[in-house]
Image 1: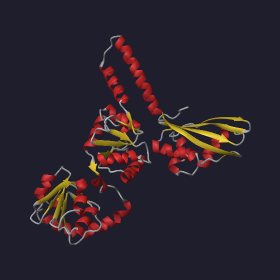
Image 2: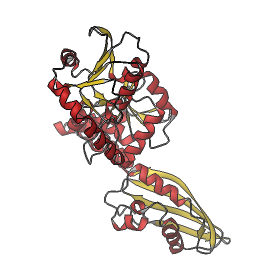
Image 3: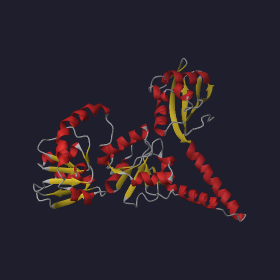
Image 4: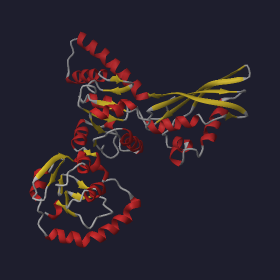
Length: 391
C-alpha cells in the first residue's frame, strides 16, 4: 500500500455510512469535502501529485442497508501536518447520497515499526553470529544501537530517555524518533512532547529542571516551540541545521547544536519580524549620531565586559562601578525589577533588548551595557546604552 518512497506515517480511519456506498464514492468524498479546507500547502490533490501523500486505500463492505470500512492514507509529511490532515477527514459527513461519519483510529509511525523489526532482526543476527563465532566491528555497532533503542522509557505517558527523572537538565524534543536518535549517541535525558497540545508533565518538569528546547527547524517545530514557550519554563533553545530534523542528525551536528544553544531571552532578538522593519529603520536613523558619539568615547565598562565574555552572566554595579550582585542573563530581568536604589548600571554578556531597556528606565538606571543592541524601538533619552562595539 505504501507507494510513497518517503512514507513516515499511515492514517487509519473508520467509516460508517447510512446506505450502500462503494470505494470510488468514499475516495470522491475525501477529495471533494477536504478541498480548500486546509489551504494550498495541505491540498490533498497537490500532495498526491508531489508524492507526499500516497494512494488512498479504502476497504468498504455493505450489509443490511449500511456500509462500513477502513480508510488508509500513507503520508510523507511530518507528524504535525499528518495529524492536521487526519483531523480533516472527520469533517466528512456524506458519502455519495448517504449520511456518513469518519473517525480517525490512529496515526501509525511506519519508521517506528521498521525500527522494531530492524532491532529484532539485529538481535537474531547477533545470536547467530555468536553461535558461529563471528566477530566484527559492524556487529558491535549494531549491538550498541539495539541496546540504546531498548533504553527508551515512558515517562508519565511521554517517550523519554532513562535519565529524565534523575538529571538536573533535560532536552525537550518533538517525537519518539528524536528520543531514539539521541539515545543512539548516548544522550539519555530527553523527553518528547509528541506534537502540539503539550502535556502538563512538561510544564511541571520545567519548574524544577533546566530545559533546552531542541525541535526541528520547520513549520511544525516552530508551532511546537511557540506553544512550549507559553506553557513551560524554557531556559535554552538549540537550533537544528537548515533542512535537518533532530531524528536525522549526526552526532557531530547534535553536539554542535547543543554547544551553541542560546538563552531564550537572547534568542528573541534574532527572530525576523518583517512587519517591524520600518520601525527599526526609523530607530537606526534616530540613534545614528548618538552611536557615532559613543564610538568616539572609550567604553568605561570594558573590563567588566571582558570578564563576562562567554559566561552568559550579568553584573549590577553602583555609581563607583563596584559589583553589587552577579546573576545569569536568564534571571536578569527578574533581578533588575527587584534591585535596590544603589544600582546605577547593568553590564551583561548578552543582547540589549527592549524589555531590559524598559526595566532599566523604570529603575532609574544610568547605564545599560551589553554585547550589542537588538530590536529596541523606544530608547529613553535619560538612559546611556553602551555596547562592546564602542570599546
